[in-house]
Image (tube, rainbow, N blue to C red; front, side, top):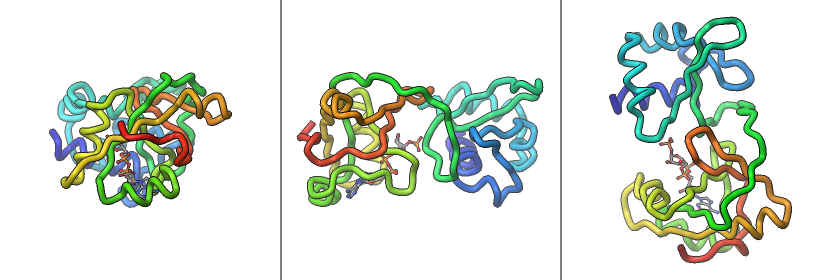
Length: 175
Ligand code: HQG
């Protein structure tokens, strides 16, 4: 299941074109197209969508009646997720590797290859995100209330990840 989840993430977020998939502007592809491209059966796909620890995928019936699927966040291909701006909780968290700390302190958080900087609502989740790469983890607190007051926009993905364009260094402190 983890392997299939990773293949689905890659197909829907990063490399649809290599698999012959053409997501629409909002990142949706027909479920049947994804099944064919990945050569998997519907029960396996449904199990990943339902069982995924992070609710990474959304399945729905499109306006044309065709069932479609997209990743809830994390794309590197251009997509308009259409998420409304949302008021963030006063504090958000970002987990990262200790090696990145000096650079982050100097220049703030950048979105890298993704569309947004990803922030977590709680320390525990942030720690897990930071631990993905192995090595020492640092959790930073983000003064989201001050950022919002200063006009930075926040969005909340369907699976509860907080997204923003960048976090200037002045809003960061040890978590
Ligand atoms: C770091 C996973 C140096 C940043 C997770 C991070 C998340 C800097 C890395 C989602 C920097 C980017 C996103 C700076 C940022 N100097 N390093 N100025 N600014 N960084 O993977 O937040 O499994 O693109 O700290 O659960 O780690 O894909 O972002 O370490 O929600 O669903 O640059 O990915 O979700 O790495 O993770 P990433 P992330 P999925």
